[in-house]
Length: 323
Image (tube, rainbow, N blue to C red; front, side, top):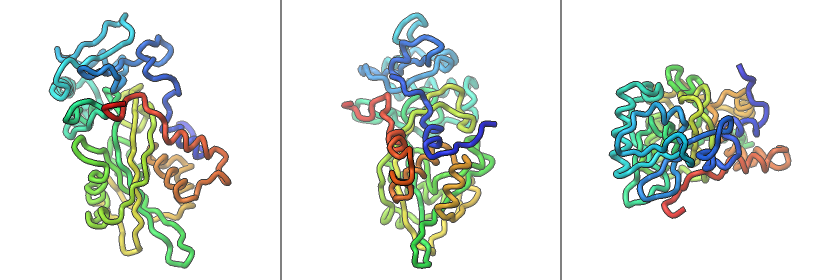
C-alpha cells in the first residue's frame, strides 16, 4: 500500500497526476511514451478527448465512427455525423456486451456534455462512458462551513464520509456537497439538487447564500479508487462554491451516498488531508478553500505558487466552441 501524501502539493499532484507533456502529441507518440487517440467531432479539427488504445481496441465501433489504422499518425477516432446518436449507440452496445467493467458498475443513464463542441445544442455523452472517451468532465463542489460562537469565529467545516458500498472511493472523505454537472444544467443547478439529495439543505438556503468561488482544473489518470480502467485520461473542471451557515443548519444524509457528516475544525481537516483520507479531487477542493480563506498563504506554505498553478492546469481540449 502506498504511503499517504505528506504535503499539500503532494495532494494536488495525486489528483493532477498526468505528466506535464503536450497531450495532443500523444496521438503521434510511440511506446513507452504515453499513447492516446484523439476524439474528433464532425467538421471540427480540434480534439475533444483522448482515448486509451485499450479502449479503442475493445470498443464495439459502429459505422458512425472512423478509427484510424494502427500505422496512421495522428491516431484518431472520428465521429462522422450526428454525434449524439453515434455516442448513444456505441455506448449502449459496449454496455450490453460487457466490454468495460466501468459500464457494468454504473449503467449509462444521465448525460454529460462534450465541452467546447460547436453547434446550437450540447453534444451529449453518457456520464458512465465519459472517461472512456477521455473528455473533460464538469463537476460542482460546495464547502459548507460555520464559525464558532466563542468570539474567535474559528471556521468549522462540514465534512461527509462516503458510503462504504460506493464503487468509487468508498469510505473516503468528500466535499460537503458535490456532483457531476449534467449536460443541460448549470453548475449552480447541480449544487442545488445535490445539496438537497446529499445533505438535506433547503433549495432556498442554497440559492440565496451559496457563493461562487471560481474553478479548478486537473488532468489525471484513473487510480485505484476511481473505478476506471487503467490508463484512462481523467480531465476535470470543478466549479467551486461555498456556503456559510449558522449552528442551526446541520447537514443530514438523504440518499445512500453519504454515510455521515462531521463538523471539524480546520486542524482536524488538515490532519485528515495529510493522512490521505480525502477523495483525491476533493482534497484539491479543500486546499483551494484553505487558500481563499488565508489558511494556506505564501508565508506558511513553501509550495504556495506551485499549488496555485497546479490547481489551474491548462486543459488539452477546448472549453468553448470558439477556442
